[in-house]
Image 1: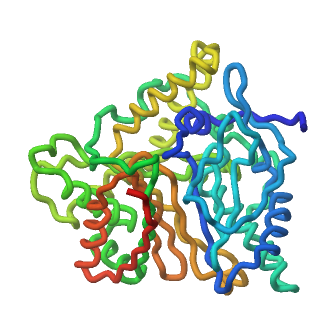
Image 2: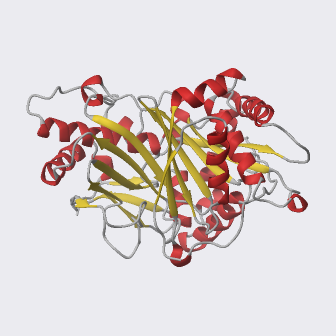
Image 3: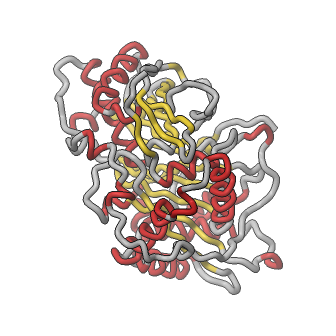
Length: 416
């Protein structure tokens, strides 16, 4: 066994404290090619890709005060997809990799434990796999650059710690403590999640956002708010509806890390009167942008990282610390009605793009969670839900369809 070991970032510690069979704290990113996948070539491509990203070749272990990662010799084995999306990829009792690569038809799936990386790191690793696959599938395929070319140290950097500055920031000042409204209802049996993949043309939805001067994230975020509101009886609308939006901190700090480096920004609205989607989208956009100033982002990151340096916390053994982290994470979860993560426009090099049909992704969750990808004019939302009732998702889709947007929806089957 290798003696190399690494500390976990603070976000990873939260994921380790809260992982369970339903919310596995895993994320999936997928790339659909224009022809069926050759599993033997995909296996070779994955073994090649981990030479570029050895950061994923680790096993998470339990220490006295915190978990840590150490190198592992376990190699990935590519399989045809047969398990649920975002499977359980961590258990302290089993030696295992914390990611897996599967295929189905034309699609390559990367499922990875969120403690290893965020969406940006996962997409880059997936693109390396896809490129190596295409180079094997098509001899002479261009050896294009699809990543930053950063050093191994920069790729594995804990950027929260690297850019942490201010110990004076309050430990309690990161997020408003207001509890938010949740759709509620019965949850699926057997710790299941239901997954929905929603497609729509960018040229049909983006002009609606531009017409009122807001971002697409704000327009769809407002649409999600209204869909949640419509599932809650008026007499119970006493709390705000809050959308939590992960923000890529690499846009604010010079980091090339493939590990977690994001913050969550919350946007809330209390529905105490009638409001149109357009007016709500404008309010959403203004609130969101006000929280994206460099000063606000820095204060939020510093307040989160301060906990790492708080002496009483550092000295507590892991078996005591874990339940405390779990408790405060669950308390924080009550502040958001759903999570909406915009992973942006996928822009692989032109040579790769000619072979790729689409990108998509999901994240496990204990509440509604939607990812958003855009590729070659197709906007794809990957929605995860623990609820039996699908009213919020139906309402969201119906509202856009009624506005003239062509919608396609695919859903997984669940056991009721």
